[in-house]
Picture 1 (cartoon, rainbow, N blue to C red):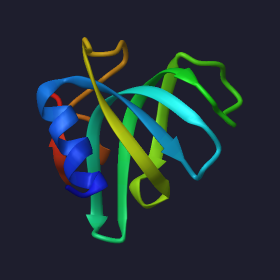
Picture 2 (tube, one colour):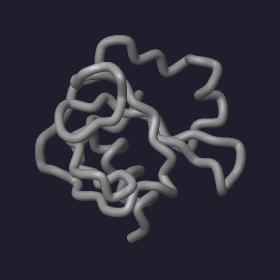
Picture 3 (cartoon, rainbow, N blue to C red):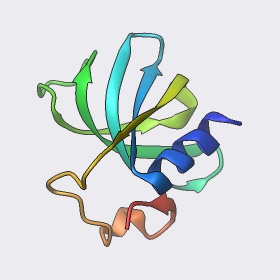
Length: 101
């Protein structure tokens, strides 16, 4: 199963994930949406619960990841609730591949 397929399955079943993004360390996330207009530019919007981050804001918080920079994923057994601030009708999600409903 590809990384994109694993992420899609996690979104569909509302399962938390551990991801290794660009080899910088493990992040625990709640994946909400895969979207993009181009197969070479697919992004994941997720709520990062804990783990490594170069983001200026501390976790937890919303992050956007290029799936082509995710080098390893682990789908966890834990189910997540929708994160505060999630808007499935946001304009950037009109080309969603899959999103939490």
